[in-house]
Length: 495
Image 1 (cartoon, one colour):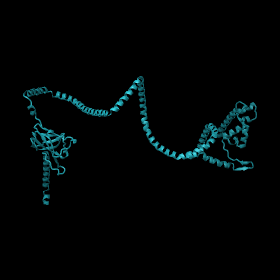
Image 2 (image 1 turned 180 degrees about the horizontal axis):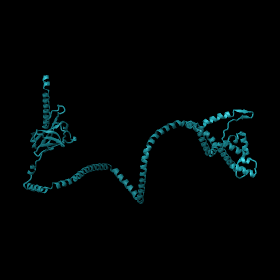
Image 3 (image 1 turned 60 degrees about the horizontal axis):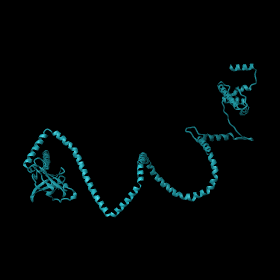
Image 4 (image 1 turned 120 degrees about the vertical axis):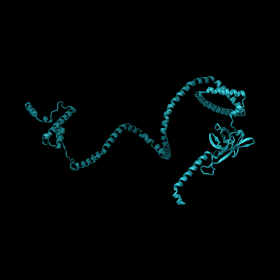
């Protein structure tokens, strides 16, 4: 068998495909023929619940022809059968399980779905507040209506009315002939009216409910007032007394009312100004909210700190304050004098602080600060004063000078005898000995100029000193020469 299947595999596959297509096509046809599988079939199975509706006539109701039961345009079941019971038509409605919730105030209408009177039942399942109909229950004939045919309406008219109706219909047809567009536009204009009428009806219904509620509340109020006639009489007497007082204060009330507009204007302006303040305070308070949240924790910590420091303040600081009172009174004059000198002390210490900072500053790089060189200066000072004799320590050191400095020393010493004595004690070398080279001539001339300027300034600052042009100190030290010799000397200098 297996060998034959393998040998004719193509034929078996073709047969399987044909069988599958047959099943699919058959299922599609049966589904359109409203063939339903029982509920125990998984996925595609369905179950129905039977309900019955009594109609005065079941004209054109034909079970098995796909006539359905619809709720709000949705098919929820189909018509299963029609029987006659006590002179009324009993129509079986098979409702799907998930829609099987029919209540006692439900209504059913027979309506044609096509022009050939293909009937359907339009079902309104009702509201849950009225109670549910048991499964298999029946809608009475009072809650159903059959289909009404036009000939039944016309049959109730007499001959004249039918003739007039025929003339009316013919005239309407002639009037509407070729005017379909105008009729459509006219009917569209009624659309807003219907919307507004629907809104008016809704508001009228709401107004009716309000009026009903108001009448009910008024009845309750009347009943309550009727039960409290004594209190009502007392209230009337009290109101009479109040109005009597108002009548006595009529002039004051009139004056108050005359002042009321100005007060209202002022209040209005204040409200406008406060509105601007509120607009500014809103964002400000929002920004201050984190600060307030943080301040809460700070206040709690401060409260704990205050509780902890209260014994110290009561037992230690308060007695100390009482004992220190006389001392503080005695220190008051000194404190006043110290307060007067405080600005100068503040300036002094500020300058001292700046000096200390400068001395303590260590610049970056290879250059060292003043404290480094101060230590070296202390070391060198000890070396300079390490030798001594019977007269005390002897300072030793080495003096370095340039040609212009030596020239200044010699010229100042020649122009000022006191400085000359000190310069002689230095035992400095003579300018003629160390500055005779042509390269040092410019420094010597610069030194002479500086010495001449210093002597001139000294004479100007010294009272009683001779006033006049300052000459070269070397020329002042030379003996007086004859005019001829002086002229020759000047010629030699010019040469």
